[in-house]
Length: 69
Image (spheres, rainbow, N blue to C red):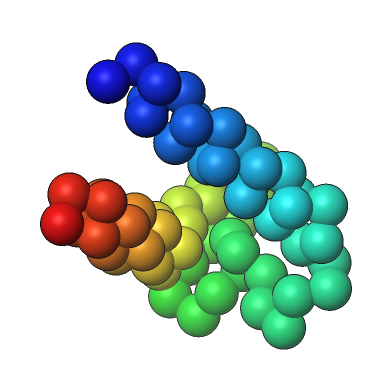
């Protein structure tokens, strides 16, 4: 049980590291997708990556569903 958890954590860290390393070469930029909210005021800004959060949630849900099968 703990072995599978460590393997899964390692895979997630490797994928996250690859995404960070090659993020500039991807055809899309996470955090800058259409639907992400960016509101600029006079002295403040508000940024919420709504579309990015939904996309990551769907991808992680799919991975977890496949993992349980």
